Image 1 (tube, one colour):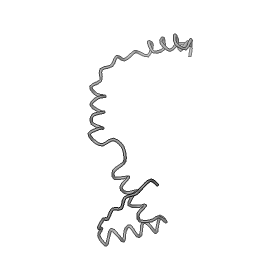
Image 2 (cartoon, rainbow, N blue to C red):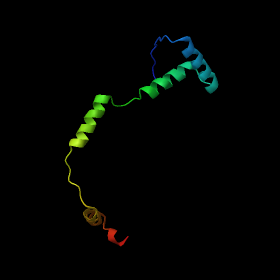
Image 3 (tube, helix red, strand yellow):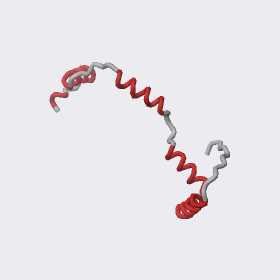
Image 4 (cartoon, helix red, strand yellow):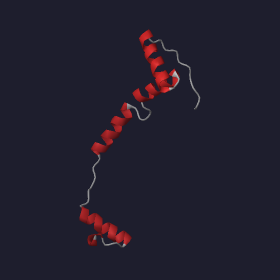
Length: 86
C-alpha cells in the first residue's frame, strides 16, 4: 500500500458493533472495511465538474457520420478486402 494518513473519526456504539461484526465475519481488519467503504462511496476518478465538462464536449461535438457502405469501401481500399463477399 502507498503512504497512508491518519484520520480520527467518531462513530456511534451501534456503528462500532456493526463494524466489529462485519470485520469478524469477513476476517478483515476494521480499517480495511472503512477504506473499502470510502472507496465505494467516493470512487477515485474524475470529479463531477470534470464529468460534466466531458459530457458537454461530447454532446456539443459535430461529426460527420459515414454510412456502413462507405465504411466498407474505405476499409476494402485500405486493407484490400472485399467486405461485400462476407
